[in-house]
Length: 133
Image (spheres, rainbow, N blue to C red):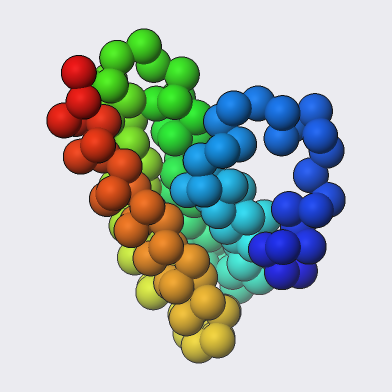
């Protein structure tokens, strides 16, 4: 499933929330959908169960921290949660790297590119939040 097809399948009741405007959040949800398949594949190898668990937690934390930060009243608080999300994105990339032998190079490269997009968006958003009054 492509990003565009997935977005078209999201119910309006979900996309009506102003949080949906954040591209980094939408992309993190897309990554979470993809990660579910990846985690299932990794967990099929008993040696990778721990890695699969770590990957699932890290990927899920990206969107969760963006949502939490978005709900904060001060820009400083928002920036802090976006920084947590940034850390989770980088951690996810690390877990994908370690699972690339099972997942395959194409999956690894695709997920790495998607994570890089999220990181770039967060690196733009965090200073904007920190420097605003």
